[in-house]
Image 1 (cartoon, rainbow, N blue to C red):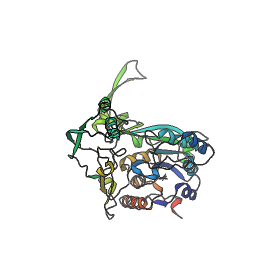
Image 2 (image 1 turned 180 degrees about the vertical axis):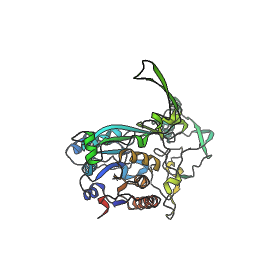
Image 3 (image 1 turned 90 degrees about the vertical axis):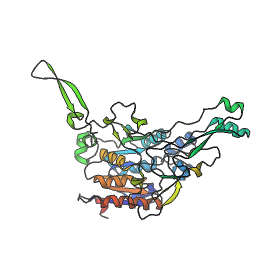
Image 4 (image 1 turned 30 degrees about the horizontal axis):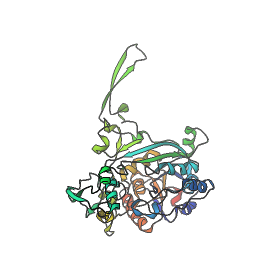
Length: 411
């Protein structure tokens, strides 16, 4: 049976407890650093001097731990504990991906690719410029109508005070300046999250590295996308001069389509322009059942809901009061288990061990238990670690088949 080790505390310090080259893959969802961008020249001075830049401020959902992306010191520890050729998969926000990836490069990793997780359920936070102009002028806007909240097909939380069907006021510009800027905003709707695919360098060939360490390659056939699509391919016979047409069902010789660096949530918004959407792996955002599975004995907590973006602002300014949610797993950035299963399966060899230095509520660990991998996680918050343990333990108990254990779990 797969096993796990959950460490609580700062990951830079706790990862020092792990032996060199003891981990097969790192799959993690680190802080996105969605606060105000710092002076990047100052950040680079710190990073190039070998120390981390300490940023203050609130990131996603007002969380201080999300104020900035992890610096090179975290990734250097991940680099040390990874076996040669071991892969690192890390999510980042669309506007901080470049900074987060730079820190990974500075730690010694080579970036191999970028995987895009595309979804149609993001909630935009865009400042209404016209309203902001009227507010600054002290002008009161006239209510001219109302509209109802639309359903979110991938909603994962029970939202209070902003439920589907609730009316939202529509107002008209009060000043001439506001009229000129009616319909202008400051942000796009979030619809994707990039995942950096990096690898610890190898000193030999991939073939030799795989034979020695079990790492360096990705599980192509294990991540193929099943499809019933039929394709016709011209094939020239070596015995005859003529070219024959060969009909193949289900992608490559029936095995499914080659895994792509594109993942979507199956929504109409994400798939309407893709043509044959089944050629891509798809996974929606975490459902309420997925979030709370294993947490049945934990209390229901009221908190700000994760809407795929920052909190929207209404006319009254009570943006954070309007979007409240209740759940037992109240971590704001829970990734769907199916998505994490796909990712750990892609980069982890059989019977391998996966590390997540930013465990959060344990989605990576939960995926590892289901897929048959050992898991080592680190989480700074006692509160989230308790949720992670409950979710991982529940998944472990659902997986009865035995498998060899890593030496990491014998101490």
